[in-house]
Each structure stands twice: as C-alpha cells, then as structure tokens.
Image (cartoon, rainbow, N blue to C red):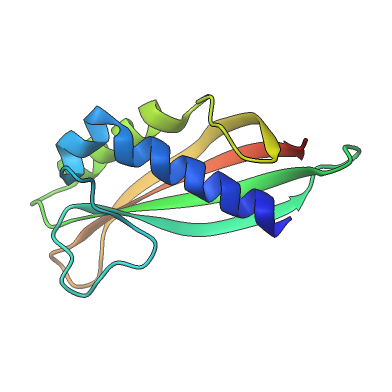
Amino acid sequence: MTNAQWELQKAVYQTLSSDAAIKAEVGDPARIFDDPPPDAVFPYLTLGEARASDWKGVNGGLEHDLRLYVFSRYAGRREVKRILSSVYDALHDAALTLSGHDLIHIRFVFADAFRRTDGETYQGVARFRAVTQAQ
C-alpha cells in the first residue's frame, strides 16, 4: 500500500510542479512543499494528508484521499481561489503515470478557502479521490 501512496504523491507533485498555470501562480520553480520551510515565500502549495484504503473487491486496488493546501497573504480569497482552480485543472481526471501501479482515476471532491486565525494568511484546501491498482 505505501508504495502506491508514494508513487501517487510523486506523480501529483510532478504534474503540479510542471504545470504552466501553477507556476504562473506560485513561482517557477513552483513553490510546492511536503513540509514548507519557515521562511517560505507566499503564495505556495503544500501536499497535505494522504489516506489510503482497500478498494473493495479489487486485488491490489486502493482508494486514496488526497489533500492539497494553498497559503497566501494576498488581501482576500482571490489568489487562493485562482490557485485552487489551477490545481483542479491540473489534476481532475489527469492521466498520471505511476511506477508499478495503474491510476484508474483521480477526481476532485471539494475545495474550501478561508482566513486563518492570524488574520493575514488565507488558506485553501482541495481534496481529491484517486483509485489505483497494482500492475
């Protein structure tokens, strides 16, 4: 299971970091982090929680619940929503290549944008559901 999760994370990262619209929003090279540094330049994306569970009835199949986070200091939610839109465009129904696994699909589930309690940072979250099967 862990290998499929890692392969999916690598494919998502590669897709986002090479996407022109994402780079236009979060810099080139794209500021996409698994663990952002304390001095990260805004805006940026982070790879969030990733859960996997058995895909019932399919040997070697997994359902993945992925979260991606956007952080911005732009005044308002506009920048966060633009970046979330670019993430959607890059990942929803994308044909990602995973080593040792087939991606059945990756689909958008929901997005949210809100102000953090510090009063100056806006955050967005995008959730995707992916299904993989071992080759």
